[in-house]
Amino acid sequence: MQWESWAAFWHMGGAAPFVWGSYGVTAALIVAELVLVIRRRKDTVTRLLRWRRALGKNGVE
Amino acid sequence: MLSAFLAVLRRDLLLAWRGRADLLVTLAFFVVVVCLFPFGVGAETNQLRAIAPGVLWVAALLASLLALHRLFAQDHADGTLEQLLLSSEPAVLWVLAKICAFWLTTGLPLVLAAPALALLFDIEEGALPVLTLSLALGTPILALLGAVGAALTLGVRGGGMLLALLVLPLYVPVLIFGAGAVEAWLGGSGAAAHLLLLGGGLAGALALAPWACAAALRIAME
Amino acid sequence: MTTPSRAVTRNPEGILRFAAPQQFYPLAGTLAPWFAQAAAVLTAIGLYIGFFVAPTDFQQGEVYRVIFIHVPAAWMSMLIYLVMAFWAAVGLVLNTRLSFIMCQALAPTGAMFCFLALWTGALWGKPTWGTYWVWDARLTSQLLLLFLYFGFIALTRAIEDPRRADRAGAIIALVGAVNVPIIYFSVQWWNTLHQGASVSLTKAPSMATTMLAGMLVMALAAWMYAIAVALWRVRALILERERHTEWVGEVLEAEGRAR
Image (cartoon, rainbow over all chains, first blue to last red; front, side, top):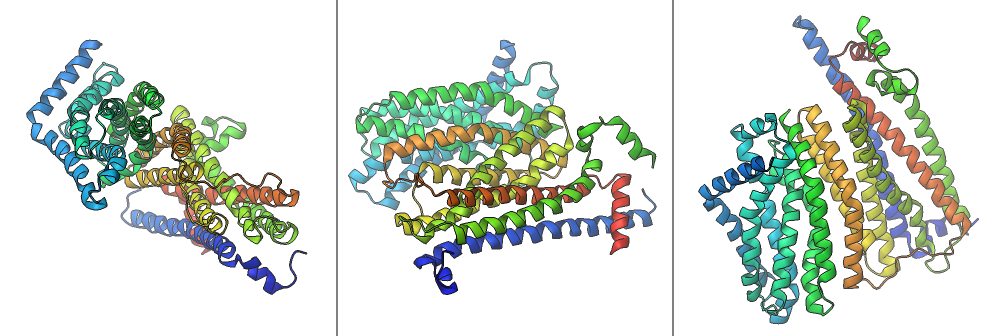
């Protein structure tokens, strides 16, 4: 084990802002991308369903 | 083959001559941008000398970028482009002719004006031929690469900004070698290597860009 | 129901059959969660190695631990651009719609990795070189690569006709790929002449094995993640593109009932 305590781990030998700044932004971007990608497919499905039903009602296929 | 090339070249030059006020705008833009820099960075002679190659090159690059939208827009609007694509002549040929005409009308004036502007920055006179030569080799590359971007963004909304975004990263090597040639000469190491690389770049762009541009035009007109 | 079966027989057998969007859509749906899980597991292992097994660097201290995301992100950003150029070429030559869709599905992820490489590089640079940014060849080319990604994404989004957007995007991806080595070479040349940055950016040559292992595991995790996200994005794009077909109608109705 590299660290004496969790506090030492979070302190990162004084480089905490740089290390956690890097990992934090990475994690945030990855989560954001995943949310966007999953939501995009759901939105597409909802939109296309509505579009199809509108087409069906008008009797145009 | 050659006659088609010359016909398109002549036609475009003639059209450019008729709308020569537009061409002067490009040149005026170049001059004004170059003259802005001393106001921004101060008129200290040594500093001006140091930034002169870069300033002239960046201004020439921006001026040729701003002119790019004219390359195909008019022909796109009046249907000439469609006619040309339908004709039996190979597209690469007349695309190249159009780019040549474009460079002769927008790039060449910049090349000719640059030495005079360089004097405003108190550049050593010996460097003027190097500057002119670097621009003469570099601006055709800008026109060739820009033509691909212009063809891709033809008729697209927000085309102007998009064109800049597409083309500017591709212009970086030209800028590096062009401005670098003058700086290398001023630094005493000789500009031959830079100019040779620019020449190589021009040959490469001449060989590849017209094909890409013709393909992009075909896609745009489908 | 006759249309889909005809589509299947018209397509070649074997692996190539998945070049049809209709075949690829369910395949992507099955594969994506597996890749995502692999990415999660590998990230956990990589982070464990990176933070708890790899020793403190004797020169840089703890800050070097940024390497476990910095280097994989930089690799991925370049690799994804190459893969995009590959799909662009395949699409232009073989005229397969799916290749263009793949190309566009990869771009945002590539841009994200490219940004992350720059961001983590800046945060790593500050404590080690004393500055967030140097105009070094590697950093500058990475920045230009980000601009190339932006250009590609902006172009494909701005063109409304999907057929034209596909092909125009493919051309700019290929033009960019041809230019990437030229840009790198020119920037390096420029950098050696100007000699502005006196810091040597070469990574410590005697990297501990555990450091290298952590980095490679994280790189593998980034691969898995990129594949998973691209597959998910491909699914949305396929639905959008193929919305006029019978099979998409069936997929949509099934999804609608499930809700």
